Image (tube, rainbow, N blue to C red):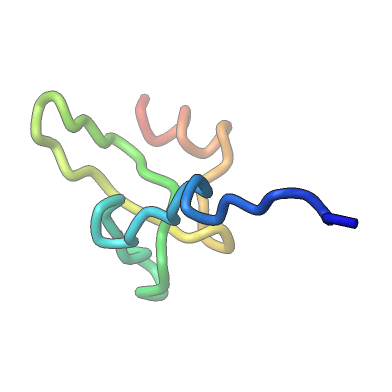
Length: 65
């Protein structure tokens, strides 16, 4: 009996990391996922931090003032 059809060619491929864009944490230099003051529409790089060094909402609001 057949276990079912397998269509591996239909599986989505993983995006390449270069296509997404990598940023370094401004504190430790690690891989950063949290951007502050970033605007791709205005071509503003902003600041980037990793999970361990991310800024809380209250800290971010205090820095903006």
